[in-house]
Length: 187
Image (cartoon, rainbow, N blue to C red; front, side):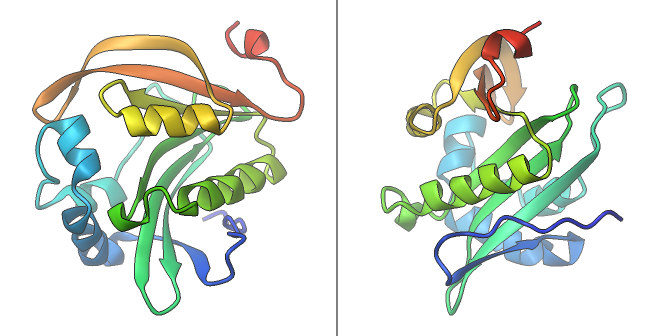
């Protein structure tokens, strides 16, 4: 298994660590205590096996990537405060996909998401990412505003994407790194 330094958050009490199947119970508890994402995007709380399924997630056949990480951000003395799924070189070399970023609900609006994202962006750039990509459910207005505030732009949308009990419209958003243009991405 390839090892890479994980994101380093500017807050010294928050540390990133890769999550594995042995962490499923802790992750499931985090999902259960922070249901907002699942309610908005899936129309229901996290399934009882949601964490185990996420941690065993395989990229579908025909979709190439170099590596993926499921990262837990823990605060000293508190525990898991955020989780993130990152896929390196999804579809295109140097395009990193943020598959998921969920922050503990009580931390919304306090700057922790910005710190975690900034650490992720820096980490990805130092590992060769030239673009970051994310899919945002249109009903998740807070997430859309957050990603726009971080410099992401909408490049396309997909309608009728099944997620749990819902069919969603997904906005594909990208942010260019290292002087690359959005036009070059969309070719």
